[in-house]
Amino acid sequence: MEREYQTKPVSRGHIRVLNVEFSEQTHEAVIDFETAALDSPDLPSYTAISYAWGDATPHRKVAIKDGSFVWLSRTLSDLFSSLGARLQSVSLWIDALCIYSEQSSIKYLNNWLYGPYVFEGLDSCENIIQILSNTAA
Image (cartoon, rainbow, N blue to C red; front, side, top):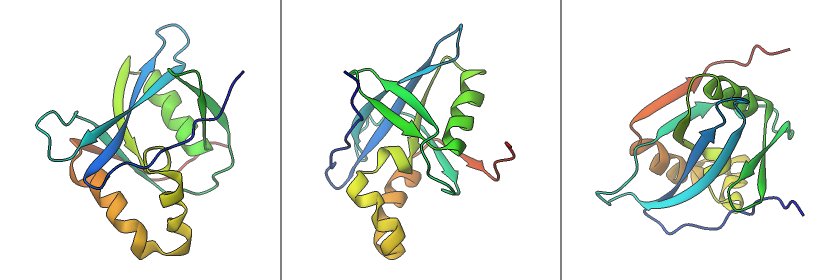
C-alpha cells in the first residue's frame, strides 16, 4: 500500500538533501532523503532550488526508495521533468521537500521564523537554480 512520506525533524545544524535518480527511458524520478551535518567535511554537494511557492496543489506523485511517495506542485513537477530529460541523477535542496513540514508551515504564519531554515539550505549549496516563472498552461 502506498503511503505519503512524513518528514521528520532534523537537528539544528543539519539539513535534509534530496537525492534524485531519473530513469533513462522514462525520465521518471525516484528519490531518497539524506540528512547531513552542515559542518561535516562529508557534506554532500547539492544544488538549492529557489522558486516562488505559488499554487501548492498536489500535481504529481514521486516515488521514494522506502516505498512511500511525495507530492510535487506544478512548479516542482515541471522542474523534475526538465531535469529528468537532461540528467541521470542530481542532489537537491528544495525547501518544500527538505524542511520538516511543521517548520515549513511557519512560512505562512511568520516569515521571520522561517528564515533560519532556508538560510541553512542555501548557505552551504554548491549551486542555486532560480525558477523565475512557470509558463506552463
